Length: 536
Ligand code: HEM
Image (cartoon, rainbow, N blue to C red; front, side):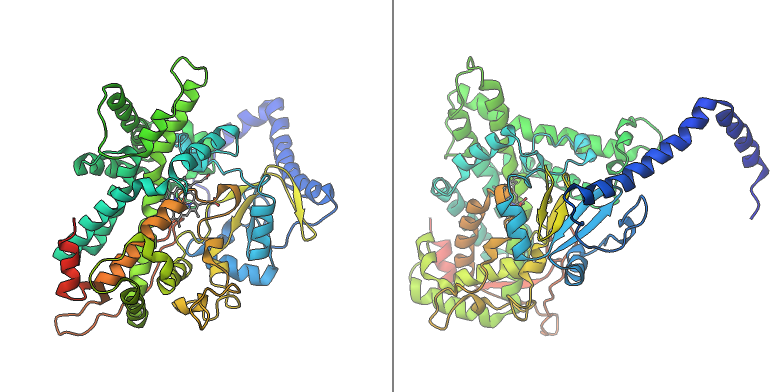
């Protein structure tokens, strides 16, 4: 193929211009040499630092490393395969970024739990600057400022605090159950709205569905922006941070305009409802029920206190994070469980039998019944394992170099726990794709201590472990008991009365949701429905 004359004409003067400047001419090869040296030199230094090799992994290519082998869909399955080939740890490099996948309980426990002080940093993607996510503490580094967020979160959403929000949970749950009885075909939207409204009410103390829905739409846009941003290869700016400087008006910069608009919403959701809550406090308006924001504002020092400004920013950030971090994760967990129950009528019947014997026929289950329902508890464990909401959790980054099992772990490495692989390890969980709550119980119906509790990994690890797990578990337990006690759940039927089989399919996102499915959810009997409709 010959090069068009026009291009040659343009190229020749350019080449001459470059080569005519001796300084530039000298710098170009120097720059290339430095780049190569930093790439290969780093590798050499790493191995020499402790005289240990890096963990094994697929073959790396100069400069791009493993970029071309990185799986775009279901990465956890490919990583699991690599894990079987390379062992506990798999080492990858993408454009100079080191990544280590931890494939089993031993390496995850060691690196994420035992060495948590070293591996609790986060990966800040350049796109987060544009999305204005600097207020969201899940993405903050392991600093004293992050610790203030965890402390405030724990004080208002820790295990000792959850009972305060039970009236809100109950109120929203019963609204949801009544809607389900009235319009069972709208299960997906109703569930989304139930969880969203519950978390928003707990966060900001406002029992006004319109106010909360408006906030939910905005928070949803931020979640969507984050989900897209974390898809490898979706935004070039993550690999070339200099692109952050491209102005919004620049031709072809529609991506920038989109990110800017999400960034504006992100700032709004993190600031406006907090400001409004502060105004309510100042105006002496009392909220209908306790909330995280009210607790945080009440705990703030006087405005004259030197720590006030920082504490107020932390309070604002903590109040806003619940919906962003907790809604899609909780929703995905609930969808996974309902799908599993719809696919396994025998499991549902057994759980109904257990609840019938604990609760009896004349009342609905209450949170205190949960501890007596081992089979229902086992269903929750099994659905968290079977449908792993965060198959690769969130990445942790190491601050300093370290070693494990004779391998060198460089500083600044991204550590990814393959939670999916642990939860689907056929040795720990024989027939791992099958849904079997029995696996956690002994013949006598007690918990079998020899089986790994999925709580080991489904909420993440070490110091970054999900702090919302207490709220999430509380809502999930009550919801599950009521759903199982009141409803029959199964596949829908087509126009000819033939069952439409239910299938489990999931996406490839950081937070994985089962692909949309249709279930038939109906009260077990008019008496069961009446227990809901007649309750306050
Ligand atoms: C089924 C429900 C949920 C699941 C499966 C889940 C899972 C996770 C996972 C895997 C992480 C990453 C942990 C790590 O980096 O090791 C995480 C972090 C987090 N979760 Fe959850 N979560 C759930 C519900 C919630 C709820 C309801 C809230 C808030 C009310 C919440 C708030 C957070 C926060 C703030 C973080 C970031 C912690 C940090 O970086 O310090 N989560 N969650």
